[in-house]
Image (tube, rainbow, N blue to C red; front, side, top):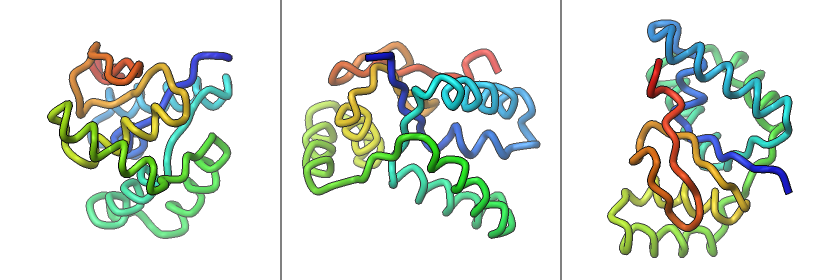
Length: 139
């Protein structure tokens, strides 16, 4: 099986962030690569968080958000299930990460991802076999 990479919400948000051109360019290049290789994975949680930020903070038009969802649902989308929520609770307790970050990790693990692209966690750390990488470290 090819390496699979989980995409955290901040990657989707930075893809829209014209006020942070370095991070925007990094996010768009990463999304393009993961789309073209068919190795990108995200979750219903990530899509919900993206929509919330896109509406409230970025103030994007709903039509644009819908178009982005159409694009993102072409990637593999993990449904957050009660089993993933339980795994997230366990990670939250044992690894001292926020509950929502723990859900992201549990979703990445459930999808068999080797990498989680996020700026929110300790880059280089491996949790449940998933390596955390900050795609914006150079941006």
